[in-house]
Every structure is written in C-alpha cells, then in structure tokens.
Figure 1 (tube, rainbow, N blue to C red):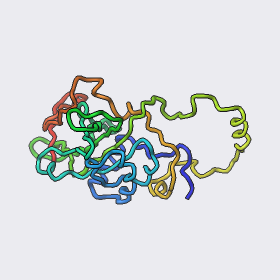
Figure 2: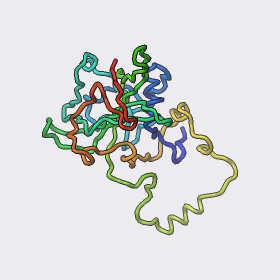
Figure 3: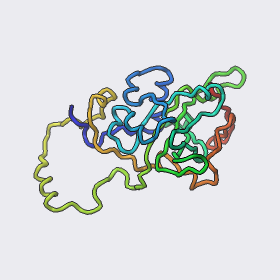
Figure 4: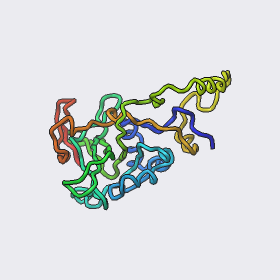
Length: 259
C-alpha cells in the first residue's frame, strides 16, 4: 500500500460530521462509515486508550479521534448519562452550541467536555477534551409546523488533545534547516509534466480506506472547533440543555424534543 499524498488527512468540518457522518449513521446507511468512525462507548474508557480503538483513517493520529457513541440505557429512560471512568470523569464546560449548515440552518447541537483525573468535584483537569455532536431534524406537526427534534440514538464524539500551539497548517521547524539539507532536497526534486498519484481531485472514502498510513495530521486550530467557555464566560460548566432552548442567532424560541 502506498502512503497518502502529503496534505491529505481526515479532518472533516462540523457540518460534514453532522450532516453526512452522523445522519447516515442514524439512518442506517453507508455501513462503510464504521471503518472510519467506529461505534464505541467511550464514556467508560480512559481517554488515552481511545486512539487504539479509532477508525482506519485515525490510526496513527496523535491529536484527534472520532467515535459514534450509542445512547445509554438510563438516558433512554429519561435519566442523565454517566461519564465516569475508573480514573476520572468527563465534565461539561460552558453552554451547548449550535452547528450550522452552509445555508445557515441549525443542523445539530454541540457540547464540549473536559476530562478530569480523580473524583468530582476535586478532580485535576487534563488536556483531553471532547466535542459531542447531536443531530437535529425537522419533524412535521399539524398544529405547530415543523418541530426541531434532537436525535439521541447515537452521538458523534471528537476526542482530542489540546496541544497549546497556535501554528496551524505549518509545522516546519522554528530554526532554519541547514544549507546542506536544503541543497540535497533541491537536487532530489525533479520537475515532471506527468501527473502523480495524489494530484487532482481529493480521494474518495473508499480510496482513503485503502491507504495504510497517513502523514502527520494537523489539528492545532482548536479555536475553530471549540471555545473554552471556562475562560470566556462565568458558567461553571454544569448546566444542561433544557427542553426549550433559545437560538440567539435567529432571535426566536424553538422547542427541542428527544426521542
């Protein structure tokens, strides 16, 4: 198997995670998605053990991993899910946010959590974080029109490690490379008019799954994915999504129900 061309990596947008991967999972379509995002009950597993359980395209990644998480039985009965492992617990931080489509429609909800080592509430905060995504779909109603319903059968979770680096896309050494190395690389580079593998259109899912190894991945722009609400707001991170939630962007109230 040949390596993926430099620059190719599994780094989906939030819209792609919700509108494609999570929705196909909820609808029982495209079973090959499980090779990319497996089904794992991650809330009872130590976060540092999760990379080994990730999909094919995340194997070898050192920063982020994706999982479908089934709804817990107690949550299906109306209770709160447990997110406690043998060494610590996941704690929600800040308020839930919305995921928008490219045409500015609300398609999902996003909750951010941090892993703490020890017992609540005196645990020690770690660099392990998680984005939990839930899909929203419109359910026709004769009296009130379309009611946004929060799907709960599966969530899609992105587990990642906060690197603390703000240098996105470019990971070249801070120090300039020696002149001898630059000259050697220049001699090896020969122009060619023939297209090589990796040029042209991006690979398909099937094509990506056929690759065995990946180049270093980039996920330093944590602020693109996530906001640290502990620093930006005065919330304690323990608040949960109410049955009625305000969508500030549209300045109107919408009711969410869970199935």
